Image (cartoon, rainbow, N blue to C red; front, side, top):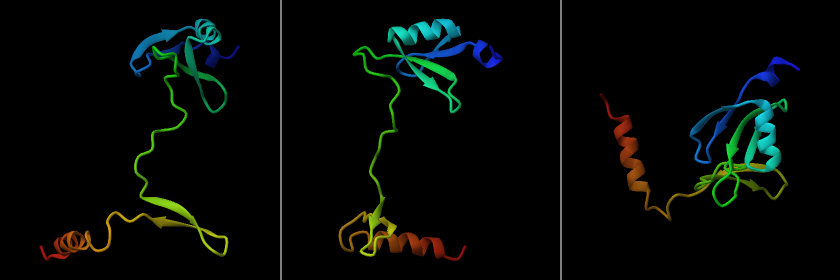
Length: 109
């Protein structure tokens, strides 16, 4: 067995706080019992384990939470994809604010 498999595996609570380290054998038993969620590195090695939440849900999400998206991909009539910015205001309601900020940036110092 390589040295990478002999290193202790970090163990975390469901909220992300550290709970110390576990041996690789202990980590494998916890994974097999379904008590923890495993995190693997890009080469397939076990990197860390996270305890499950009280309701049994996994502690590690499969993707980060999305907020408001200000840009999105739009398919054009000719089939190409392009990025388009989402409007932040309706009509010209933000124009005076933008022009004020622009004027302040261009003011002589």
